[in-house]
Amino acid sequence: MSDPMRPPVSHRHSQTASLRSDPSRPRASLRTAVVWEVLQDALEGRVKATGRQALEVLDTGGGSGNFAVPVASLGHRVTVVDPSPNALFALERRAAEAGVADRVKGVQGDAHGLFDVAERGGYDVVLCHGVLEYVDDPAEGVRNAVAALRTEGVLSLLAAGLGGAVLARALAGHFKEARQALDDPNGRWGASDPVPRRFTAEQLTELVEGAGLTVGAVHGVRVFADLVPGVLVDTEPGALEALLKLEEAAAELPAFQSVATQLHVLGEIRETRGDREA
Image (cartoon, rainbow, N blue to C red; front, side):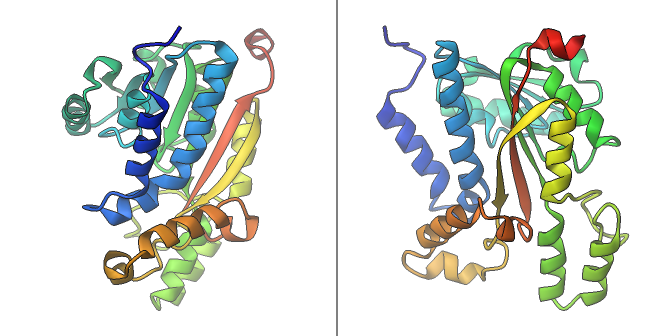
């Protein structure tokens, strides 16, 4: 029996297309396309494994719903936890405009006190995007995200990459800052650096494995997008789609992951919840 909450395949394909190429914001798709493709596959895998068309998804630090609203548009129920009231207000408005307000719930909170506002062990998929850079203890942040998962759940982890920052500072002619980021334990290029912490792919996979998950995939995000002059993407015919395809082709290659602006890791529970709590 078909689920009325589950959009038809054609709608899902159009949803993917909209994430890949927004004509009013051409660079937006470059920031989301690779992660969205991986996340959508993970969601479809959980639907097949559980037999439930509507999954429970937790988006920690989900802000205004860049991923939460598209996930809800696929028919899933999404709880967004974010410390910013303004972001949650924007989320509510965005969900309403997309017609998914009944499937998106925003609550104020953070990764440290996650279970003050979210259910422990209550979610099929947890998104932890742009969170680890800002928490005091990244390992605790990952552990909390994993503790929110149901048995055999999936964690989508997205964080700032060290190599991308070093490369960007060097190409801008800021060689001392590039060297400082390379040597700094948190990957910061100076006191005015707006990002508190950056990671290598190895560091992120260690955090995921240390929390009891198996790493299912690692992808580099925005390998080229932040280095290509905007005028090429905005005005050159076919440039956006060609750049998207290049990003997707390079995303799984370790050599390019090492210089990506962001790193995406997909983790899967490798043991039963009872074993983890023992």
